[in-house]
Figure 1 (tube, helix red, strand yellow):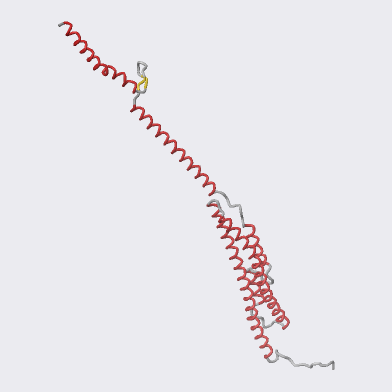
Figure 2 (tube, helix red, strand yellow):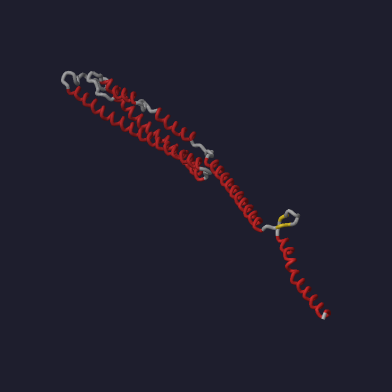
Length: 259
């Protein structure tokens, strides 16, 4: 019976050892799954810590990208501001001033009666007032000739101003084309504004030319009307002198054909 029980005990021990082997090896197989060094020099891996580190790195990278984008936007904004502050390289001020000076010079060269209030008042008081009844015939004729010269001079002045303003048209046309081209090619707000301001200045110069023409024409018409009114009054006085008995026409002997 002793021989019969020994094989059964051996087989039971072998079966227990086989069942216990996976349990003994289980800690050894799961331990290498950790990723950091423990206190006893073995590698330990913590998946939760690794995931948090990756998330932190991703957020840091996103912040850096946002800062780079912000710096790029600020740089572009500075570039745009520099363009907006860039001055227009073209200036029409000198040309416009020359045109205005040319027209003003023509007005200053007005013959006999200039465009000055005091001089106009003096001339009308002296030459276009009511004729004095005591004036001699020669003085009346001299004043009439002076008024005629003023009227003719006014018409000539008007035509000279018209010719000068017409001469400004070609220069204004070229300047207008340059300013429109500069406005269309402006790189910033300041250049566009300056081009627009110069176009307004050109328009103002053209309006001043128009005012000069209207003034010269009005002056010529006023001188003509003043001459006509004064001539009518002078004619009335001369007619009264002719018809006044005793002081009017005095008959006398006339010699004809060298008799």
